[in-house]
Length: 506
Image (cartoon, rainbow, N blue to C red; front, side):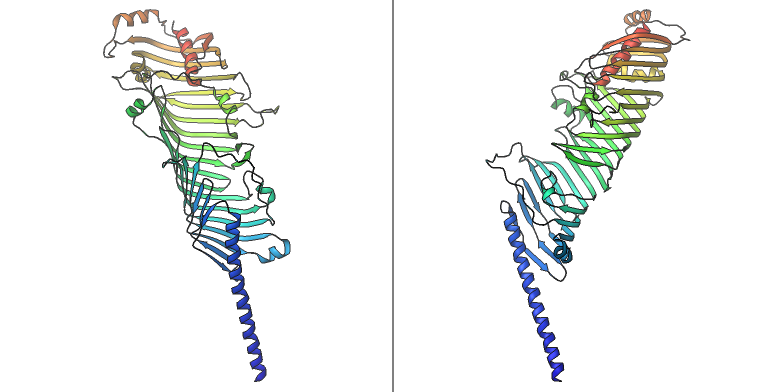
């Protein structure tokens, strides 16, 4: 009996001692965590309601954490640390954490034009032990980026889930731009907003990132104003965009920081069912700023990119041009647009095997006339040399008149049966040849109000126009076009097609 009593007493004392140690360690670790928070973030404004530690569960939590670090503000419902590995700590000296869970964080970042200069540069923090976190999981919450002290969001992102796996933090990673490394990332967002400029904003309904694959759904560029209001707000010609894309799929996206620039690489991107509407008021003064060609734009981008292949499928482009205040805009419509782009890159431009950029386009003009374009250029070429060739078939007068009538005050009769062109150019001028076959082509020049034919000018124009049965294709060589550098590449392309057509008609 006495022996049993002693055993029970010993067990009881042992339990009390262990309980006391656990309570002491819990209290001690709570104090250490609080002290670490206050010491490590001494230059920040921090707050929390409570810190809880469980030695037996190998976990801890911070309730209602708040943090202000320079221009970054963060608050959350709770931050949990789970499954701290004592074995790894004592055997290898590493801090290994099973999971860090952040519930419903709200992060606000205020962008600053300038930051106050400091006489002494702050030393990078030293980490006495490497840290490994198996999973950082963020559930719910949102991210907002503001321009200076504006109350309007520059960027807004609503999070469903955010996960980083196998996160490693060490003295080495702390010296990098991104102070940690990770193996993979998964993100799910149901709302993204980006204020592009004062006239347009970008909205994405759904974003999914899994491993290195990205899917964007319901991407839109939305104008902030009606066409009339947009025209009132601008002082020179500008394009008003409306864009809707069903899905964008990016495969195996690899990103990194290279000096002061971000680097993006992907072997394949596909854009499905894009619908783009562009409106321009030609009654406004010209924008006389220099418009670089696409090769220069890629070469001088602030972001380093390497996209091996980009496909645009089943898309539509509508261009509207207003040239008369009393008439509706002229319209060019391209449907069933398919584009293939290869080697869109500005990485490794000193390499002897740097690839040539190739672009192939097919579409239906005004829903009926097939057209195709083959276009090549070398991003490295400082003269911005390019070659472009293409063809169009079966262009009827009705298709042309919907654009020519409101923009040029003319109507045409007849049909352009085929048109082939091949040009080589650079940033200054282009030259090439063109073949065109047309039948019974006539021009009617309208009176100023566009309602009636101007018989005298129309008759004069049709006397000048060369017309026959055109059983043979008319070939015109050495067609020249000089680039207006205040206009886009597409204006440049229109110039040499127009010059070739005039040479064929006259």
